[in-house]
Image (tube, rainbow, N blue to C red; front, side, top):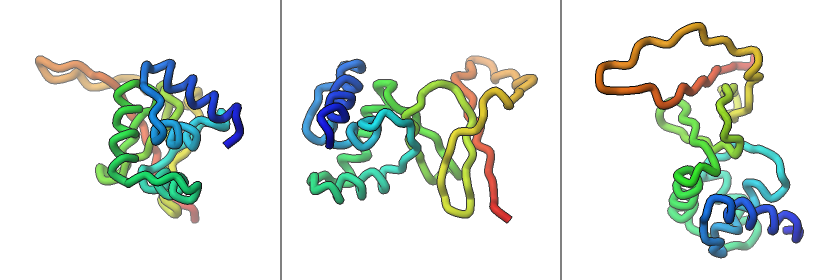
Length: 138
């Protein structure tokens, strides 16, 4: 990694008050080192880190992604109720899920209109609304 990518990753972790362990930094570099937003699965992140020569288990990747999510650094997006993607862009915005290749991308938020939501059941409140628009190439 380039020094500026490592520094961006260290700053990202520090901003959330997370200790920069070797493995956290290695994962952060692949998530935000280049300054671009991305959608990634634990498996694809694990493979990317493995290819760089950094020894890290898949369980550690999952645990670290959970810590990043709990710290508000990334957002988990569930697709199908079985597959989780992690998004480095944490503001509210919709997603496209591309069924043909199993990828997730940002959808234009300015084009989404939600006129109303149903009332939450008694004793609950709506914490967030996730919009995933499924696409299939024809």
